[in-house]
Length: 489
Image (cartoon, rainbow, N blue to C red; front, top):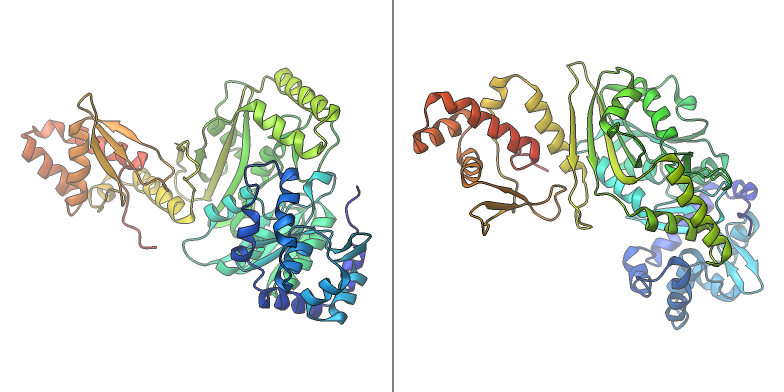
């Protein structure tokens, strides 16, 4: 089935879009009202969930449920039910005229998905249609926004490869100005519609390749989830999905252009799936793509993904019938990765910061836990730790460091100490000896690192020659996330 047309969407005046948003909010179309219905069939494949959810929705006769069926779950309702949901025959007629609603044999339905993120409404496409389909607020988009969320307000933010504009629209809450760029004209049309729907000002969208439309501008924050799925030769290309034959080609080109678009001290946060196809580690490949640009680099690397499951997931998204076409797609994609030598895939947050100092680099292996979600506050802590480690020694010695909140220490069977950070942290459990654990507590209780080191050495009767080793232990703990600078959220 073809993607719904967008040409008529421009017929909708901003006032009518805002009337729609007002009506949806009046009905409480939000995450809380969606959740009870979305909870049905959570463990099923996407295409199997629909009938289960609409069964329970159809048992309700409220205007809210009519609206949820039309806009969120793509389940047609009778024309009178649509009018009841919208509260106005005139608004219904306007939405039908513009194509934001369509009338079919089964009733009235929105041909676009409506995502609800916080208090923001985002219309996007059904991604199973591929091609020029426009991505909305998926799980990975939410992860990117959560990680990039600025600890303090910024002047400007760019959503590169903006899709339906989700990141630009949400991050506008922390920025004086937001912009979005996408190579797909359809994405820009939906982004502009979503901007008007949410009544946001100082948010601009432009169509073009990577930084082309903003080549004369710089930004304090750049976020991007570029297409990163590998594309077998015989598979039809998709704008939002494929990043090249390996999957990382577009990301590498983006990294080459990105530093020039950052303000001094500006930050970029990218989320990609990174393929391993040779002996070059991700950090070296990122540094090569940056071609000597003065940027600090922080990589947060997930545990390896199951390649078989990864390929099956994407093939299922394009072959809903799960028949012969699905099997052929799985076989072709696995053979393609094998030919390229891709033997591992990991999700990677790539964080860059423009600097006038000697750039530093750091890699964090993230814990294997779905509970661990990178937040902007956690990212800020990691960056501040690396700044301290890269700075002059006196700055480290005079710093006040603390053990992260809710960290637990447990005696292991072999006499070692197991240190477990709060599950929300990206770093998992670490085992150390009792001396290292004592050092952490001494630093936490001390007024500064220098005082803590002196007190611990006196307590353990260590000679002055051991001081460099004690300070090195503090450095290791800070790099691993077992110590951090106090940071008020």
